[in-house]
Amino acid sequence: MDKMKQLANGIEMPRLGLGVWRVEENDATASVKWAIKEGYQLIDTAAIYKNEKGVGEGIRQSGVKREDLFITTKLWNADQGYESAHEAFNDSLNRLGLDYVDLYLIHWPVAGKFNDSWRAMEEIYESGRAKAIGVSNFHQHHIEELMTTAKIKPMLNQIELHPTLTQVELREYLAKENIAVEAWSPLGQGKILQHPTLIEIGKKHNKSAAQVIIRWHLQNDIIVIPKSVHEERIKENVDVFDFELTDEELKQIDGLNINERLGADPDHFDF
Ligand code: NAD
Image (cartoon, rainbow, N blue to C red; front, side, top):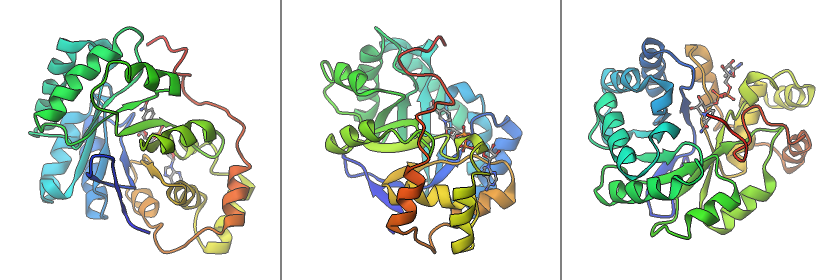
């Protein structure tokens, strides 16, 4: 499997990365450094995670060249709007200590504001300070609303997606629109790792349930950003390129779907 996926604008994005939600600044530095040492190139942070400084520090300490890494951050809800989005982006760059990010996302579809935010993001993209731009937590109707004023189509949508919330319809729509799909909480926040089906499939391949789930995402053309602050798990989660799930196994995992969200529904969030 190709470890990179080409986005609609031609940019190559790693298919597997490290998520750092609920990771303190110091732990973020260590985790990012370990991850990069293990070959991760994609790091997913956000202004609201309050660890962009720590992430930037980890990047610098890794000694890996900037152009060999792919850094994502996100525009927080309180900062949505045209001017505030520009300001928030500059603040994120300063905290990261970078002069560009690879991907900048609107974190949630704040009603009445995301079209204006997107106008700022298009300008940021055109300035070269974000190599790609996209959205997160957008349903199909949010993307359709965005496209009534957008000049540039989002290149990616980062959504809650794991074996118990497989988002089949939204994924079909995104594929049709050539918008890449990235899964957040791809391991169901660790809550589904004891599922016997996943453990059983893992045994057949000498892999853990976490590795089976990550592989399921990859074989479904989903970009995946599992989070861990433990060196061993960070290593384990990227050791997924030497086995392949069968069609039968992929179907078994699809069958775990119960449409259950761990986070908010993008139509009903109050933050
Ligand atoms: P996740 O599904 O990646 O699960 C992480 C948890 O799984 C860990 O805390 C740990 O308990 C467990 N785990 C990880 N690897 C393991 C292993 N090998 N063995 C056993 N247990 C293991 O959860 P997440 O952090 O919610 O999601 C991943 C990333 O997605 C976040 O860090 C963040 O970057 C992103 N995210 C984005 C949004 C959004 O609104 N865009 C929302 C939530 C998360």
